[in-house]
Image 1 (cartoon, rainbow, N blue to C red):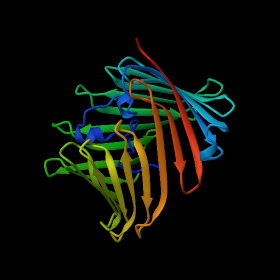
Image 2: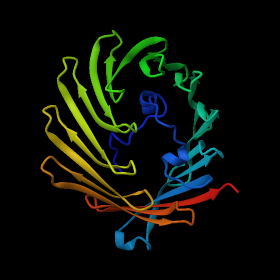
Image 3: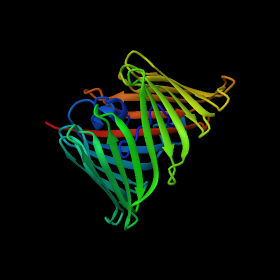
Image 4: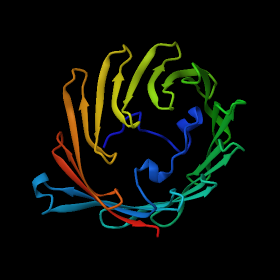
Length: 304
């Protein structure tokens, strides 16, 4: 499944909720998992042919996820096709805020650590990542009296690498983000337009001379699900668009990709099988462009 900008969210070092004050979702809610889920083991198979789905399948990888009772991910393990552990990540929380994250390699050696500090309003104040032994990446967030995000300063080993400043207009629904390099020179501007419920409707990127670089428009249904994304080039001409169709359980059942001439370039279909809690335990993914099929099977354990 390809990504669209309206769906991408980096929880680690930048979160749209910092800008707009959206209600924090649990990891279960983000994954559209229902009930008190304790563990999910997902195995991915490559199917030789759509019609042969039940006759031949080859393991591509396995992911196990453990959740706490509050619905937040506390451990994730990723295995290769042979069942060998590739890496695992352990998460720790305080007051349902992620404060610590450690990544381990296949030899159980820590390869990356992440820490976070929050202010008295629960806003992310500082985030730090230690990687490759001694390298340290750090982000400091600054807020105004209304606790709106005003600035981000990024550092690598204590040296400034980039920074961003934010301005708000139209009842905070329009957010201007100005990006600076390590010399504090403007390199890019982003203007984001949000709905009254905090959903990203439009994002435009500009050069340092205010020339348009690219634009994205997002359309949602009455349930707040992204149903279409349109991407425009520097001349404000439609470059591509994606259309998403959902089933009655809230999962994407079809993705349609179109080029600038409105010709379909890709269609991905999903067929689900659900358990009694309403969570899918099997998902078949068919790609009409590559003529490939992938089967996802999940074993879900619930808290009693």
